[in-house]
Length: 335
Image (cartoon, rainbow, N blue to C red; front, side):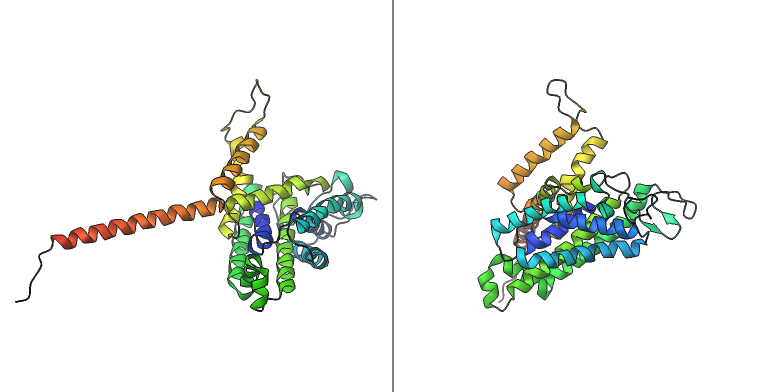
């Protein structure tokens, strides 16, 4: 679900607005370390990273706001470019971010990382959950209850924005910049709005990604490979689609976990030495190639095509049934 939030943020910029970007992990890292600074524990020893130990109601929205402000600073320079050149600039952001995250030790903890805040509500902490109404839930179950409404609200918000005037301007820029300018769309304003909106959601996703218990986040976490995985999730699920972002994230990030958890593939092969992680990566890599060749609109496009075929089949069946029924009825002739 956290990966779906990040894929949604990328889809706003690349799917709906048509701006090629590989810098999503940079903004996720900004959000993660903002959350760590505001919500992390106070330093115990000299040299420990700074933490203000604030509530999730402060550090989670602040992660999105700081990432959005960073996007507002980077956007005017990056958006002067188009296509391949914009992709190169956003790619450079990833490596600039890795350098900054490794050297800003007071906030990031340096290469060895730091402790990230765990969501808590009053006396209830997700790191050590207590029984509620006599029911003891695990940490993962609490996270499921937290992330489900967050993802639903984010998806609904993005869906409504894309149906608004601003969302239609994003899509007009994607389809034809010259045509969009002719009908009165401010190209720079539309691109900047999409860039800031995408950065905000990426910051939220980064804060949640780093705070997830059992996970691990250090400066190298926010690398190019993770950014490419989000691009793959967007392409496989469906470009410019809310449901496509969710399905793509489930496919790219959830499928390998499911294969490992349920032992659907062998843990290792003696002949080749491949691990289950290697085999799952090969599997979804092949499926990505197949989708790009035979179903460019992704999983959501495939679902829509199947639904359309079923509806056509039902309509034809109804028409044939109606013709047969009418032919069997007696015809009354006027005298």
